[in-house]
Length: 168
Image (cartoon, rainbow, N blue to C red; front, side):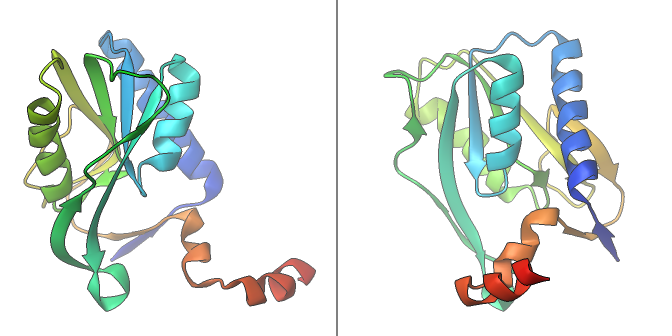
């Protein structure tokens, strides 16, 4: 089973997530997105809430064209625009699939940054097969569909193919 998501649907999901977080009353002063999946989500939430965005890269999906999970690697450093990370953090990603990445990052952040006093998670999709439950989500998926996100068209598009794509 798979779920195909258009750009319009994707953007609406991010807006719904922002509203869920806002209506919860969670007072955060930092957004951390998990790259790559959480980059777009984090960027939009950072703009809506006018809060600084930090980017933390992780990597685990390597084999079988990025569909099989391998060893999780969490980058040693984060990219951020402030000299110090905020103490009330909203950690965002696009989805919680197996849950291993979000769980590991959620566990590790307070160890790396002991000044964090509040840490909540937000995703667009929460799959039932996940070992981790996010604090905020838009869609709960009781099964385990492969989600075809609108930007995946770029996964197999090489620079040489752009001319053909753009000339239509």
